[in-house]
Amino acid sequence: MSTLHIGDKFQGGIIFHLDELAEHGLIVSTHDLSGTADWDEAVKFCIDYRGGGFDDWRLPGIDELNILYINKQPAGDFVRFSYWSSTEYAEHFAWFQNFYNGIQDNDFKDNTCYVRAIRNF
Image (cartoon, helix red, strand yellow):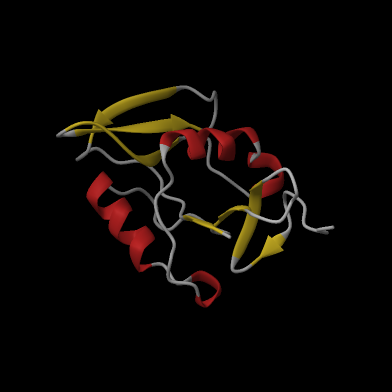
C-alpha cells in the first residue's frame, strides 16, 4: 500500500495526480520555469529542466494541464494567468489553460504563456 498523496514533494517536484493504487502518477516542477515564454521556448525549458536530478521533464499535454489546474491548490503556487500545453492545435497554434478560470483555448505559438514542467513516475 502506497503512502503517496497529491501535494507530496517527490522526485524533484510535487505530485498532482495518482493512479488508483497511488503507486504511479504525475509530478509538476516546484516553480515556473520562466516568466513567460513562447511555445518553442516552453518546450525547450521543459526538456532542459533537471529538477531533482531527473532528465525526463516535459511540457504537459492539454488533458494533463487540466488535471494540474484541478489540483493546483495542493500542487504549488501558480500565477493566475495562462500556461502552455504541448498539445498543438495547428502548425502555428497550441493549446493553453488559464489558471484563473480554467478556460482552455489555443493561441499563436509565438505569443507567451507561463511554463511548468511535468514528469511521470
